Length: 224
Ligand code: CA
Image (cartoon, rainbow, N blue to C red; front, side, top):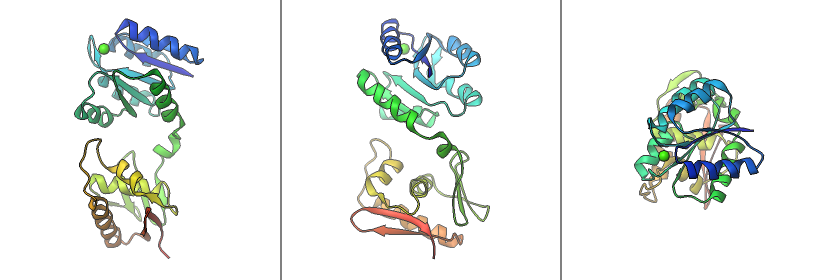
């Protein structure tokens, strides 16, 4: 595989490049946004590691260009900007993962394996269940093709459930899918989202039902 490493700090860049090459990965190095843009235009990459504080701007500026050319390439941001706000900005900006500096190389390699394991088709194709469809690219649910507008968190709950339709999904996984890193999660909040989501689905005549699984979480399935 071929990886683009965007990092301006020479020692960090050299250490990462050596580690990655040691894993048999082809590494293209870029020390600035300008060079990174050229690299994206010049080759396809399987993964991008992206620093934020670059001499000519914020690394996040690269993501729209990358998405326009290689929609499926995972991006892991590596940044000293590690506050919750920074991480949310990175993930909302299109990064697949965000690793605050300093990090251990072992953790970086584990996250790299994790993002590469995610099946891109699953992320991109609409998910269908009975007459309900969910397009996470367009962030849109629809019943019989008619758009169903859902608040962001209900959309995320629905996505987590629909990816595993017919199987129970744990509360922990649902909460992880829905809430920010440092969000205070009241114990009844997830249930409140589920309850509103159920009502909206019923009002839209979606032929699906969400069941509570005692002690575990929830599952969604086609209504009988
Ligand atoms: Ca930097």
